Length: 214
Ligand SMILES: CC(C)(COP(=O)(O)OP(=O)(O)OC[C@H]1O[C@@H](n2cnc3c(N)ncnc32)[C@H](O)[C@@H]1OP(=O)(O)O)[C@@H](O)C(=O)NCCC(=O)NCCS
Image 1: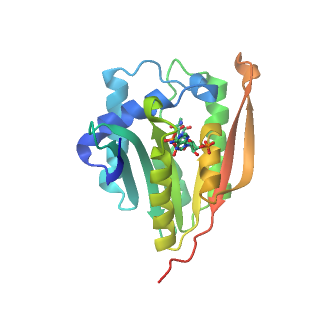
Image 2: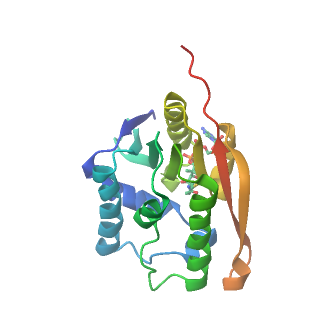
Image 3: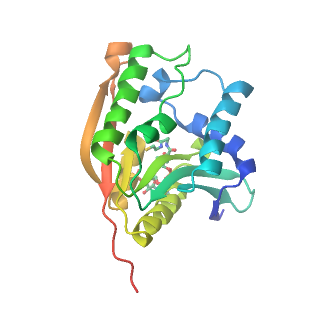
């Protein structure tokens, strides 16, 4: 199996929605679940991201493809900008979708409340390479697809001389550390408050741009 990186195209966004749903499992994700991936839910995820893809010139959607089967195995949404942006507009554009009936309302509020804090107070509105989302299909995890996407994103950040920022899940943190991301803050979600039996951790991480060899 050879894994190849490509820019996403409009017809890839159903796969984007399917892969995201299948890989975000466990921990707090189970309390935020949108329920079954019905055609309506799939369409709403697809259309929200297609909107960013079409309308935001700073959005960069990439995919990793298995060259044998041509299947998309991992996807990511980066935003790479060299100029400031109005923060309130950004929060409105990327804010939570309406709370689904299957989600736990307090978990939802605490999770998205923390994301808003992370973006407003930690990332800020300056030039940035922001990893909105990275996800590898569960059948293809730990085979290097995530690293291919991280290498590309870090090269873009270096090329445009911007810091990179992300909100790491526990599964992603080790991978991000390998690419030079450093923890600046973390949030521990106590899942026992909502009937779970463990904690989940989100780690806010920055990586400074590195000089590009001339
Ligand atoms: C986090 C995530 C995107 C990583 O994607 P991935 O394709 O599995 O990433 P990689 O295979 O490049 O690297 C993951 C780990 O596998 C290891 N690895 C890479 N190639 C490997 C191989 N051939 N054999 C064994 N391990 C390998 C990496 O060293 C890394 O180890 P670490 O986690 O201990 O640091 C994936 O686990 C995922 O989608 N998780 C659910 C959603 C999520 O949490 N997304 C991140 C949100 S911030």
